[in-house]
Amino acid sequence: MSETPETSPDEPSLEEQIAAYQREFEGLDPQVEQVVSALQRLNRRMNVAYGRQTATLGINNAEWEVLKALVVSGAPYRLGPGELAKRLGLTPAAMTHRIDRMATEGLVTRERDETNRVRVIVELTDEGRAKWLEAMRRASVFEEELLQDLSSDERGVLGEMLTRLLRRVEDTQPDADGRLSDLD
Image (tube, rainbow, N blue to C red):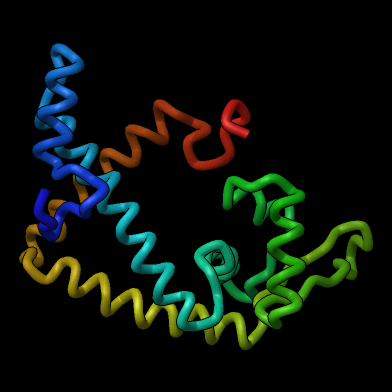
């Protein structure tokens, strides 16, 4: 099989994949499968691209997700480890490990809450915010290049359609944003 922009030597083209699925699974809607398979491949490839970008900044995608969650929470960019774990779909133990590593790297601080000494607060550092901003700058360039062939109207329509699909999954799969206990 020759390598094209949409395939690798280890992966069939979308058309080949859909043809195989149709051969093996009677009644498959090829339009639905094309949309779903294209979204899955796009997501996977975008995650690889983002991972390359964050790696050049000395962080990984997992650390990027924590930085993003803290920024999205708003100033002063502070959350408890439990809230971070919930937002990222992680176990508390996995979140603790991630926070430990990031605190050592100077991306976040972890301190006891002065109003509740039992509670721990994770806060974004200036260095963590600077890494987040640089990652956003790089991602913005990548995303503009990704969507360069779409007009502003097409981008708007695509955004609306993808948001509708996202809402459908969120409404019908309430645990889809987090950790699935049966997949632990």
